[in-house]
Length: 440
Image (cartoon, rainbow, N blue to C red; front, side, top):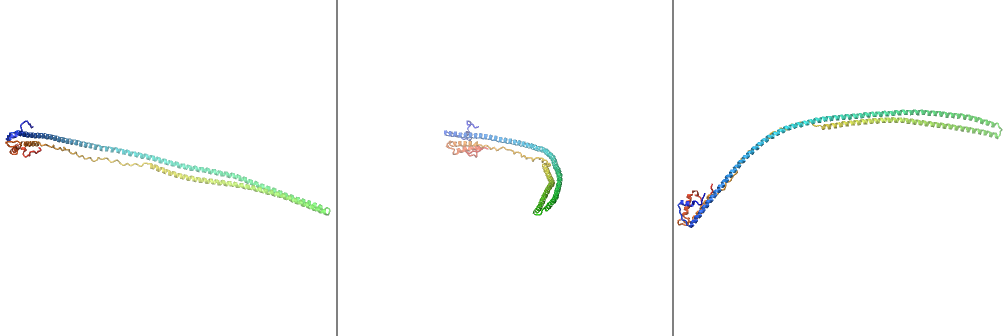
């Protein structure tokens, strides 16, 4: 360490060089200035050296810290790599083990699901078989109902036919009695006609006989009267008596003839009336017989019509029954089709899921080695530059001092000092005053 109170480096150098100077005040001032310059250069060199040493220490510390960080980083990356690789291997094994476990469990689930489907299929077949049986039973019951309806209709028609036949028989019986009654009535009418005709004929005959006798009696009486009149006196009176007798006879005969004619007419009228009544009665009987025949024909027609109606109703009912049976057959087909459509299809086992295979393993790449970061070397300050500057300034100050009668160092003295310095300080050889150089 430089001590400014110690020996003077310049004096030592001058002593060594064999120079002896007698310094006046100006010379002393110049010497002091030179010494100050040298001291300042020494101080500057010492300060630069300290700064360089501190920078060197800081540089080494930074470099060491970078190396430690790189080492710690490599150790951490290695541990992370190993842990990640170990965790991956464990997860790889666990994942494959879990996949195999799930696959085996999935096989059980698939077997269970297929067994459930088989049970559902069996149950569906049982329900369908029962439904088919119900459809068949319902169809048979419907068929039996239709056949029973046909039998009931047939029995009803039979009863209706028997009723109609019975009614026809009753009509036949009743009208038969009516017909016999009319025949009896007709016989009575004819008998009455015959009796009335015989009675009128007998009466007419009696009248004719009585009239003939009366005519004869009147004629006899007239002849007698006329004979009496002839037996009287002749003359006009006798003629008058004859004429009177003849007139009386004639009047008697006319009267008798009129009486007989009136009675005959009356007997004819009675006979005509009898014949008319008989004809009317016979006509009435004929009308009654026609009514009887018409009633019989009407009953027969009604019976025949009822028979046709019953036959048509029976045929219509049979045709309707056939249509109902066809409809029942169609309904059963639809019911069977719907039942079959509701049946489950027989399940087919699709096979197990493919067995899981381990996936390809991951390729691990070891982490890149971390190297210490670049630590820039510190900028060094020249420790020689202050000295050179100080010595240069000192030389410049001393060049103005008169050594041995010379006023400046412009001649040999300055050259000597410079050569002496160069000779005594070989490190400074080849350097130019006022320049600086870095110390490696």
